[in-house]
Image (tube, rainbow, N blue to C red):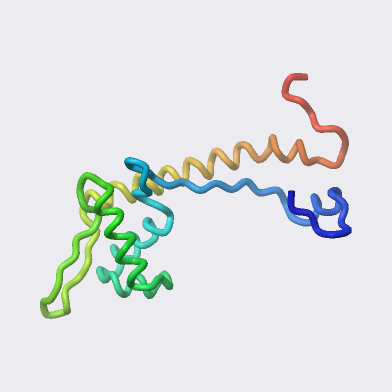
Length: 139
């Protein structure tokens, strides 16, 4: 438990409102196939069709962005992103139809998780109430 020196648990409890947090990622074969950072990168690639610009917007190094894309493409049965080199504008990067499906499903999962956490917060709030003893669900 994290405690501030000299502070009682009661004082710590009232400093900030109760929040429930969770993170979701997709693993395939024991490897991370889609993380929040990967989903953010897919969204930025969809918006600007450039891996380097997407990396800049997210403040990722180009190497990190490239490695995320490479890992995602290797882990899924079909590529989430396709890249092209050369051309008039120096190539480009685009999210595939399958990539959009994966991204949409992942964002839906995040929304469902947020909803679940919002529903559960009332139970935890009752347990952290300073108005008396916590209520048991078995009473």
